Image 1 (cartoon, rainbow, N blue to C red):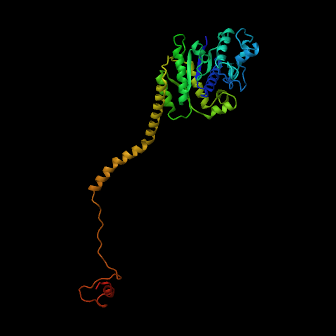
Image 2 (image 1 turned 60 degrees about the horizontal axis):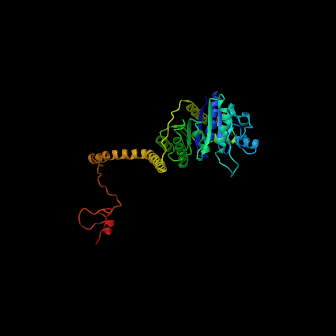
Image 3 (image 1 turned 90 degrees about the vertical axis):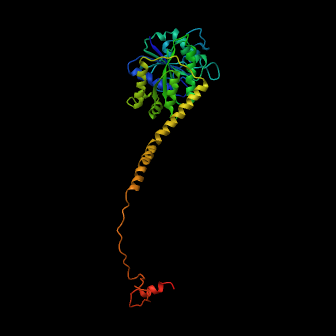
Length: 356
């Protein structure tokens, strides 16, 4: 029986990048993996298929029946499943035509079609669902509500709206807890260079009662790989980022600690976000000013000693030299008699300089 795992996250948070690299890593380790894209855009499998567009299940049904209804199943498994990098199987749920219908409809119909065609009976080790997390309609809750996925990872950043979307997913997990087995397995952070990002996410995970599984650094290698329409695992297998994704894949395969989350109210979430962010900024300020404070303390410690030495130590005195007048200086005669040129060489100059 395949382990079924869902990655939920706000649109644009990078969850599809994370999921594709994790499935690629697992496939290169020898696991049989299926990735199901549950986003109306249908781009979850893009980097696994070398940039090729995959026909979505809803589009296949619509083309075959002309209506997209459930009455009959004109498609086969091979029509909806494509094989990507390292043998990863991919399915895209798709969505309705723009401006018409429910965005979650593709997920609902895809799950039903996969069940009827026996996809879940295939010998997969892992089935991953890449699900948009900031749309809360019933279709996007299907992996949780109907317990297709028993393990949910929340992909977040240190941005408030990313945490807000993740908190909403936790509300869904808690709401359907009695009817299913879906639980939170942990949080995956996709770094966005937000101030105090790690502290914010760790505080959020702790408050939900779960853990931060991986903190994925922001790295140019990810964008470089996507520009080549590949995963990092394929494009740069020896890079540091490839090792990060492999590490995450190994953590996912390990026995997870599943928890029933304790979602926050909006006020609690905002308070946690601001408190963790401000606390991180204070800590950073303290770290920066620590050397300066240490130098100031050292100066204050040395100052009293210097002042004490100045009071007790005698000031060195220079020996007095006898005054020897030069010939150019006006010097008075030995007595008060009027000087003459014969009595002193400088007598005339003294006489002129003496006040009358």
